[in-house]
Image (cartoon, rainbow, N blue to C red; front, top):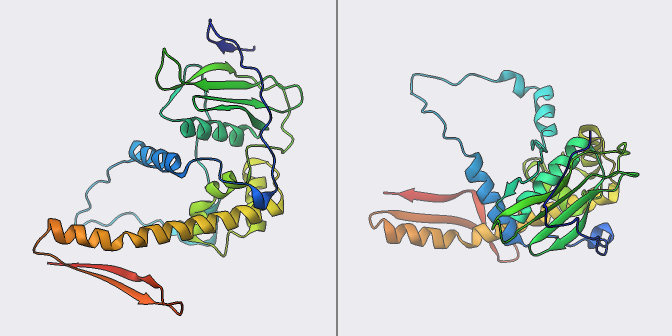
Length: 270
C-alpha cells in the first residue's frame, strides 16, 4: 500500500537544476561549518546520559571480549547508528538534522537518494532508483517555524543497485572522521571502500575514499590548530576566575619555529 502525505494547500515542488557532480578532489564542503558545529553540539546535548557514580570499592564489569581482534573489528564497523526512520510532519531543529536523517535512511535502505531541491528554508530528496516514487520534502513555513516534513511518499518501488548519490566525498569524510582520528593508519582508502560495501551494500570508488580520507585529515588538523590556538585564552580565563590557581601550558617548538602541544599540554595547580 502506498501512503502519500502532503500539505492540502501545497504541491510537490518542481525539480530544479541537478546538483553538480564535481571530481572527488574538487568537491567542496557542502555546508557552513558553523551550522555543522551547531548540529553536533545539539546532538551531543540530546544524546547525553549522565553516568552513574563509581564507588572506590566497586569495579566496572570487564569487557575482555572487546580487547581481542574480533571486538576491535566490531567497533571499527560501528560507523553509523542512526535509525533512518522518517515520517510525515516529522520536525527537525535544523536543515542539517534533516539531511542527517535522510542520510541514515539511505544507508539503512541502500537506495539511491539524491537531493533535488535546496533553498535557505526548503530541502527535497528523491530516490533515483529506476521508476522509484520515494520522495521527501522538508521546509520552514508560516505555520511551523521549525523544519518540518510537509511532503512524504514513503514507499520505495525500486531495487537497490549499490548506487547512492548522497555518499559524496564530504559525507564519506564525516562518516569516518572519528574512526580516522582514532586509527588513521587502519582506515585507509581501501578499508573505507570495503566497510561501505560490507556495511551498507553501497559502492563507492577508490578515488572518492582517498579524497574523503584526505579531507577528514585536513579537518582533524584544522580542529587541532583551532583548539590549540585557544589554549592560552583558556589558561587566562582560569587565572582570572580562580585567583589562587596557577596554570602552566606546556608546548614544544618544531623545526619551523612553530609551537605545538604535547600529550600533557595542560597543568592546573592550586
